[in-house]
Length: 233
Image 1 (cartoon, rainbow, N blue to C red):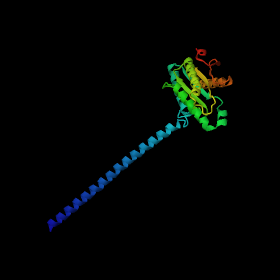
Image 2: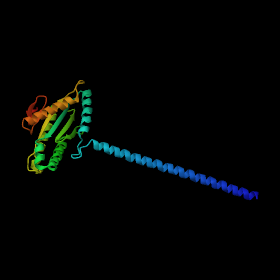
Image 3: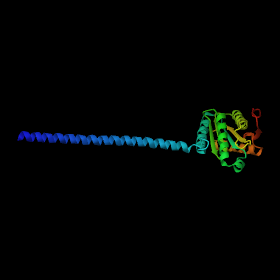
Image 4: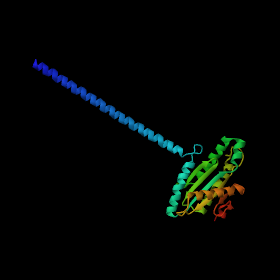
């Protein structure tokens, strides 16, 4: 009887131990799967947040950086220019008579022109340290770190030529020639200068280009109209 009792007791203990181990294993497996799920969900959430962050800096129509990104980029490059004692240039680009174009042909046609102009700007600006951005409406901006007035002027002329060349490829959806005006500002900032001065100068230059007949470049330093590289050098 004792032997049978011991056998039964041993069996019960073995079964108990096995059951306990299975429970522990199942619990550990569940915890592991939960941890993996949490890691996966966290990674997906981080990826989604990064994607949203990138989208918040992009203009959905032209796929160029937007005004928010431009402001942050200009501030960073301005600070670097101050520290290094190097020049920085800014070009503001505005499509001439864009409101009339939209009113006459509709916003869908206007969007085509915005994409075309954005493409011309990106083609002309091939320096990876520079930035082409759409500020909103029909206005674009180009930030050119470590770039002097003369080089910025040459680039502006390339942009004028590139926009004018659109006609040659029969890419104008309205049959109307579209031109741009450009305002340029170049500064070697000191510690007491602010990036808003660079922007204000370029904006005033752009206004002068519009006032003087459009389809041209103006540099703020002299507020002197020019339409060719020779006038800059």
